[in-house]
Image (cartoon, rainbow, N blue to C red):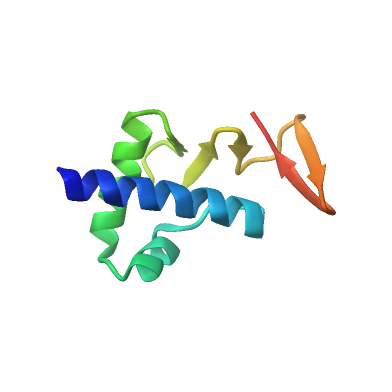
Length: 89
């Protein structure tokens, strides 16, 4: 359980880093490559993060829709920082 908690924290941090640098969330494949883990381990981490409302997943998938305050989908709420446009919720 402690390993899962540590992984979830690291994955959550990677999600935010990717939103900030790439203006979008990472895929499970990108996350698995970053942590050198099988995709099913990353999918489980995404599911745990969604269950605790740290992220929101698209229904029936492991695609990240939101990691508060970031939105992967365009919204009416935007912030422009250093020439980058971020969508918020």
